Image (cartoon, rainbow, N blue to C red; front, side, top):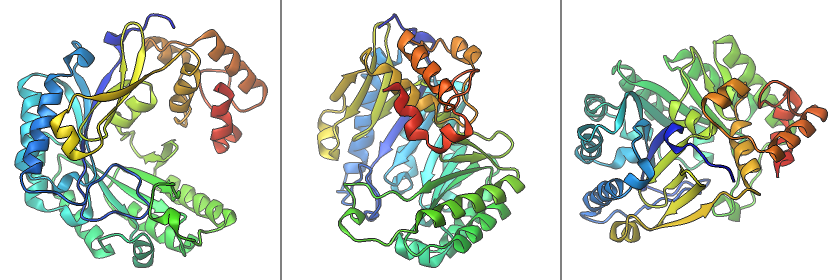
Length: 377
């Protein structure tokens, strides 16, 4: 592998707070439904210790974005979130325009809590609504209802310093194109600038995987996607990534950095990192159990991206972006394109899956993105 430019690679921070009220049957994230007395405070101290020990990964860089994910971060006391943010601020670890995102479940959105976070510098909220339809929410076994979702949006709209994104899921059992259409219309009626929309996938390590579920047919899924695209476009929302829609260029800077092959430092149980050094690119995972992480927050399992795996690792990220990445932008960000990558790129162009100017899938290549990415394997 060539020499990389770590100091020129933008760096984000992900903080994993794993607790949830219940295990959603479609979720395969690293979560914990049994918070013990004092564990929250112990975990925050472990995260701060981990941050101190991560200087060899951070180098002289400042974080361009911070993302509190989970789990359900909104189950953590605001004073404990403040400890983390104060550490970052007092040590001058944040860029001046740093995007600080925070995930919520609708039931935990209260004006006092959101105001506290806003006063600490949080400027973006991501709310896991999933659907405004009661039957769809019951199919997903969510612990909130449509009223909770609308109330949460009403509360957070009152805090002008926070931009809002929501999650919606489609392709759910017994869901119809009409119910998704209603979801999209409700979303478009709100003062929200960003949408993350996911097709339900049944992952092996989930409760749903053990059940026989009646998922909508492929023709119904396609109908849902067409309806959503038309309605969102009419309201000024455009897809900029596989699962992401925005209007007025209100992109998630944190996620854009992932897909543009930036670096990210993950703190907390099971958190993932990608770190560039002068000689290598490493992906790392923290210990998954809360108790294990608290005892040894700096321990990781790591895998170096080899010259054989670099091409597909890069393609899996860059090709998620709907409008692709220009060669000028790649040069500006000092993203290395190997000779083998360039050859595979030409193969994709010849097969009408990739466009000529930059790293970008054609319409057909984006529709069959897995096949397009696999060109680089």
